[in-house]
Image 1 (tube, rainbow, N blue to C red):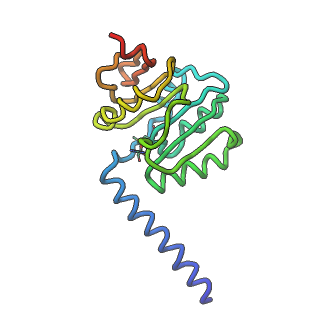
Image 2: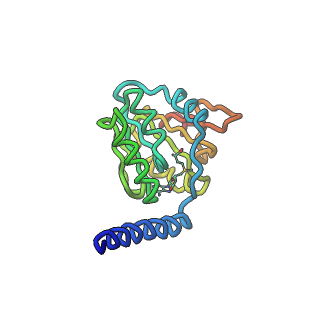
Image 3: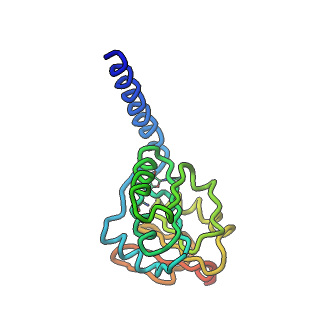
Length: 178
Ligand SMILES: C[S@@+](CC[C@H](N)C(=O)[O-])C[C@H]1O[C@@H](n2cnc3c(N)ncnc32)[C@H](O)[C@@H]1O
């Protein structure tokens, strides 16, 4: 009985700690509004992912793009700074039959090198896009596709866009030449 109480107390404390950490991180990140399923499908189609492509989702939320990308044969990397969302992504990846194609990292995407990426997916904010742009310009290799949902990348010109859905497709470095 005592052991049961102790286990419940420990698990309860861990959950409370994760919730507090989540609230704290929520204050200085951009919150969470996952891409709708329909728009996620449009983004994946626009990215024209091919077998073996390396897809990165910066701020992967609940991991929906990771599952969709892996299903299409790409090698996907997602990184998430909020512990609960990271755990959700991690569990979903582990339960997926394409788990060998999915790498879920916990941390800040500003510390992740992007030079391997063929496709980068962003659903962030105007402020974070602006901050991220120099990193993209420094690390992306020629031909990499960047798709930003809802928000443009300042001073880059989209190679394609789905205007009514605010989905912006860029190709590096072509999108910087205007
Ligand atoms: C609007 S949600 C998008 C989630 C997912 N990509 C989607 O489209 O459904 C943005 C996510 O980025 C995460 N995020 C924000 N800043 C981050 C950072 N610096 N490093 C890692 N994740 C970050 C947030 O915690 C949040 O889960």
